[in-house]
Image 1 (cartoon, rainbow, N blue to C red):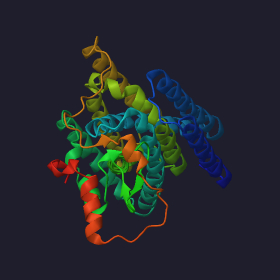
Image 2 (cartoon, rainbow, N blue to C red):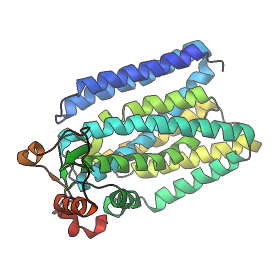
Image 3 (cartoon, rainbow, N blue to C red):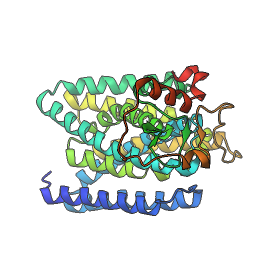
Image 4 (cartoon, one colour):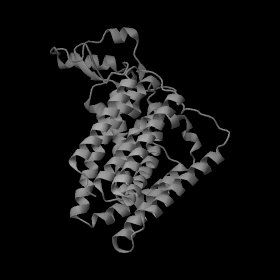
Length: 361
């Protein structure tokens, strides 16, 4: 598959432009409703499918089918990512009007990280063909583990990433709008929103470790691997606001996703030494697994409406008062020197909540 540099540049430029449009459309903090989320989901899916049609027309049916197979796998696995986001936002009681900014930055970071992972994966496959056995075994093991742990959920309070972040970075105990950093009494502090963003980025790294090998099972073309990932990820924010309050209805989806990983792991193993399974067959199998798992889930939970996850009785963070916001100083102002003891006193003053939140330390 010959992809000129200008096509790479055009695709990357389009992604940057659409991210800018999305950021401008949501520049003011507000609660994103189902209708707005549905419209944006439709827009992102239309772009993803439309790009696949272009690939099909320009490079032929085989590459078009490979793109759609990769896009479907990434989009399906992303649903589990969305549900993890819902758990994180609920646990930390992140106000809904602030969630889009975190997800926007999270998706931006995910695009960069996955680009790095894809490049590294392509180099490994090109220079060490045996790594395909490792990828295949990892996919099979991950699918089996997902089935075994299908009823288990992330506990954000026990996250090693969060505990490490809190040990290294001084934080307030309150959300200050959509700010990630604030300055108070001359001390630069992270807000809980930055801690949530770091945790979301960490979870995406975990999901990327699963999804990148999965898409390499259906195509070896780096351009298709990257674009399928990118267009699937770009719609994650809208998908979150559309599906977060419905996660209780997708009771069999995790099993479906596990079966997808097992299938692509088997396909990769067969591809190495036995037989190449045609892309249309792979696409049909993945589509069938995901469709059946969704239909069975909706049938088993019919009659249930939208409902969000319950917030904890004592949320680890709160929303700052107007007086606290007014007391903040410009973030990039000149830092005055403060003795270490005084800085620690300010830190204790700003973090009273975490003295009794042992699970976050």
